[in-house]
Structure formats: C-alpha cells, structure tokens
Image (cartoon, rainbow, N blue to C red; front, side, top):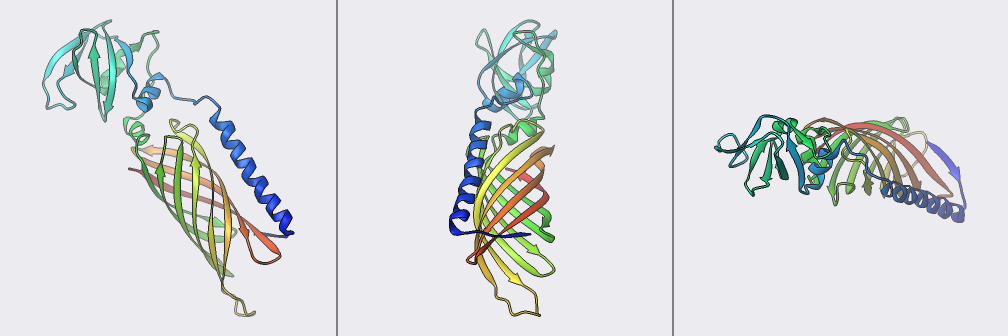
Length: 270
C-alpha cells in the first residue's frame, strides 16, 4: 500500500486525470477494427446471412436441428447455400432454389467462402457465449499483501460492453477489509481465445484494523477502481480470468491510499 498526501485540489485533479485517461483508452479501442478469427467467426457473432459453396460430393440436409429429424435433401459440390443461423451443433441453411433445412456444423468443413478461402471455426460453445447475457465468477488474489477473495456478477449489454457488481473480502496481518463496487467492463475483442478487457468503477471499502497496540477505529471510505485483465477460454462457457486492479481510496483524512491488486479466477457465462 502506498500512502501519499494531497490537497483537495490535487485529489480532484488526480481522479479527473485517471478517469479521463481510462475513457480515452476506451474510445481509442472502440475505434479500432475488431480482430476476428475469420469470416465464419464473424458470422457466428453477427448471425447475418452468409453464402458458401459446397466443396464435397454432397452434404445432407435435415428437416430440423437434430439427428432425430429425417434427411430430406442433399446439396451437391459447387452448389451455393446461404447460412441463416446457428443452434449449437446445427446450422440452418437455404439453397438457391429456396429449400430451407439444417446441416451439421461439422459439415461446414466441406465448404468454401465465395472467394475460395477456407473457414476458420471457433469452438461452437465458445461462440454461443458471445450471445449470453449473464456472467458469474470468483477469484483469489493479493491485495497489497492481504489475501483477497472476490465474487462478481455481470450483465452484458453488447458483446463488447458489460456492467458488473463485485464483492471482495481481504484478510491481512494488520487489518481486514470488505469492498462492494460496481463497474463498466469493455472487451474489445471477445472472439479471441485470450480476450483482453478494461474496466473502471467505484464503490466503498470498510476497513477493520486488527492492531491491539494502538486504539483504532473501523472506517468506511469511497474508492475508485481501474482494471486491466484477460479472459482465457477453457471450454464451453467457462473462462479463466486474470486481472490487475488499481484501487484509489478516497479517505476523510489528509492522505488518500492507493492499493494494487492481482487476482486470478474462473468465470462462467449463461
């Protein structure tokens, strides 16, 4: 923990500068082109119609998205089909003659883009998580030498922007603390297997000193948070989340506190 003195004007200037830099970074990242894993990955996210040609003798077309549905049609080599939407391991297609049905997602390996390129496939369950709205996770870390346990729950407005609530318990040698905070999380490249994010937020911290040598009081202070981290896809909707957070604690004393925290945990989207 780094403790420093500052006048009220300096405090406000530092906070305004921090928030300004974070928002500037968000705007800069938002203006950059999204790096995707390929044209097929983009379609999984956007779910807009996309045309491909068959690169195999034939592909079976089912009447519904499941093996229990009958095969009622086949599309042959070089025939062009339109991809309408995906459902787990199945893709709804439409032929040029207007026939609508479902093909196995694995059969997309036998197709080509109209420019002749081969599609690159994301994990189907990873692609599904991009349209999930809720997120929940837990993480363990180091809060300026104290052991930290954090729980978070989030809601995704778009595939790039989320809001989340966080609750943390920090246990140290000289004091314990609890943090309740909320924040906005910006994830510029959610399609990537290792997807970076930026988060800003604020809340309150309750500190409970454990020293018995000097009479101390419990205290409650406001804080600002700025985080950088990465989601790493493990399987399905499960992710490893690695995060660095800077806590700027606004106290009622003549000095404010600044605390750096590292943590790692697991998150699930649903």
